[in-house]
Length: 278
Image (cartoon, rainbow, N blue to C red):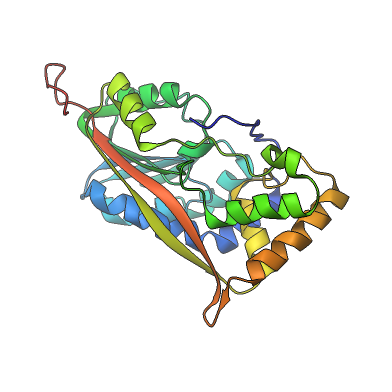
């Protein structure tokens, strides 16, 4: 798994959280592709890990209805503050991390999902162990994650921009993610005890009106880690090079950038004697 660089949770700000809320419809639409295969039904208990400002969590609450329960957690307090505006009798939000779900009891949820979150988690094994514990027997896990073998187009352009600005040797200081390949995910899921693992890599298209929108979304979705290792002057040079590269992707519909996410699903065995899938 990719482990280059250190991802900081301390760089998020209220402004970045507000920008994420305004532009997060991109993440929301990608999340719908994640929710569909879980086949959630009325009355289900669901945990959204890395809920952000809660747009997808609110959508899921509508799927499980008034007899269901949905909880969204996120380590970023500024995002949870916005998410709580969406709270209801069956939808709640709190600050929390995937690696520590001790506030929840065993077998508390029918489904757990992580939308564009797993590539921010350093201790993936611990996170999956916690998820397995809080899932009921037969419960499902779904996640999407950046695959280091197929980086987002924006990440490729950013790397080129850093090189053009003369900082090629420092490319690891930009937009760090801790992605995972299909083979790595399969091994982790099996080690923790999940069965019926399946995954596929999907190409998704983002359309932006201008370069400012691209930069704003990139910064907000990375909660301050987009170019966090560079000084303001260095960032200005990189931003200018990045803007020129992105502008070259303009189409009649807008600036077209492809994003690649690996969608993975599995379930907890109904009993410990259930054989693992090959």
